[in-house]
Length: 188
Image (cartoon, rainbow, N blue to C red; front, side, top):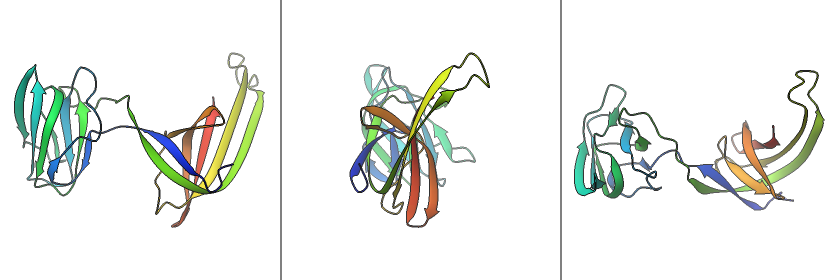
């Protein structure tokens, strides 16, 4: 079915921005109701300047205080960000967070394209009653395909709809430097 087809996976968004220094834009929208910003940097000595809407008014915040692990948390709750200027960091990832700095799970997803090279399909059914009488019957479908990890990246929990069923990446096996196997599963 999809031996060499280009597949489009849905990846759950986990961060607002990831990259280097410069004038940047967020890669995804802020969560409904707004959030604080948690910045995780690769090195110290940089700043993150944010301009946007906080408490209903245009505001500016510069996050320049980072701990020994290069993590800094802003003090303003943002409902909109219009400008993001990052200086002094080789790499930084900005996450939506609570006021205490705990990461917030986003509900949005991004598309990830992957071209497979080998495909297989499996279906397992049975009764789990030997283990517990409360679970009952199950249907487990799995698909696997091989792809080149130098060209494409799949992560656990990426999802795709195939044959009207939603499959989730459960395992990624790195077979060689140029071949990985993704195991997709649906069911329990």
